[in-house]
Amino acid sequence: MQNSGTQIFSWTLGRRAAATVLGAIALGWLANSCRTTPVQTGNSEKPTVVATNTILADLTQQVGGEAIALVSILKPGDDPHVYEPVPLDTQRLEDADLILYNGYNLEPGLIRLAESVGVRGRRVAVGEVVPPLELAEEGSTVPDPHVWGDAQNAIHMVNAIRDELIRLSPEDAATFTQNAADLVATLERLDGWITQQIQTIPPSQRQLVTTHDAFQYYARAYGLTVLGTLIGISTEEQPSAQTLQRLADAVKAANVPAIFAETAINPRLINTVAEEAGVPLADAELYADSIGGPGSGADSYIDMMVANTRAIARNLGGTPGDWP
Image (cartoon, rainbow, N blue to C red; front, side, top):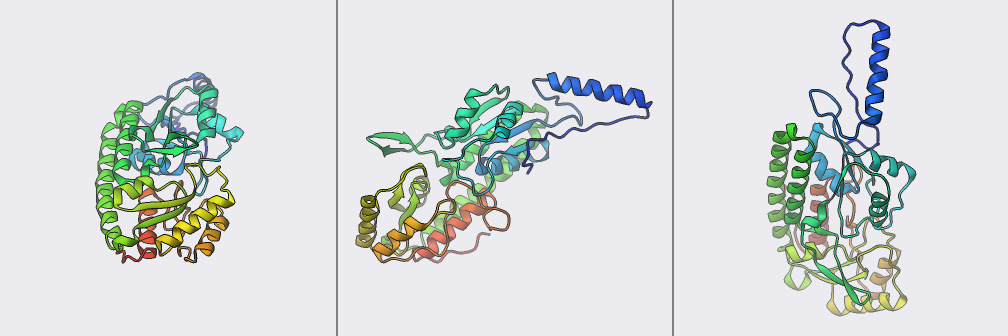
């Protein structure tokens, strides 16, 4: 995966005089400085695709492969809810031939930036191909952006990415189509595997308590109940002392085996809930809004879902098996 805004240029130079070479380079630089769409012939420049978060970046890389130059704005562990764009992000968005973002206000800072700068690339809210769950928030309802929690939704996202890449680079359609088909087949297996692991949890213990409300799609798809969360959809929220106490009381009353911290959020407050309720904090944190870094065992969307499922099943009293 390419993690910088630098585009890849391929130059093939024959045996020419030095002056001719320099002239060709100068003309090439001028053409690229004025170009508004990528040249898509032969071994020329790959189209640049910007993904706003790590989950989208991973799925896009698996579909696009070597045919695209991928830039992921967020790094593993970054929280898209609270990410504040930096000046380099403006350049990345302006230079992109295609911008893929989740939508449903998952990455508000980057969405505002993309709407305000002079982007030339097509902008696509990939997560919005999925009809959202509507969650109550401050007296109204808002769409839940965490659509990837259901592997079937991830399949819809992969198909949308495939279609956008084909639109961007039609001559690579066969590559994108095959890569997407391979990934969809794996996601179908993942979907069935997750269901099997959650079913090993005793029915009365299939209750999930997490730091923020990011697992509704997962719970609905795989037979869990979200008993409660410390904060709502966005990690920007700050829970009150009353919220902490209400959640602790609910956890204690439901006899939940364990509750879960998340990798991108300070565990201090959810640990307070665990202590108040007299239940353990799970032995592994969940990946909610980002894949893990290299060596984490969760450094792809699929590995993230496997790691979360194994942690949930194990800590709620199930007996998860290995991912094949």
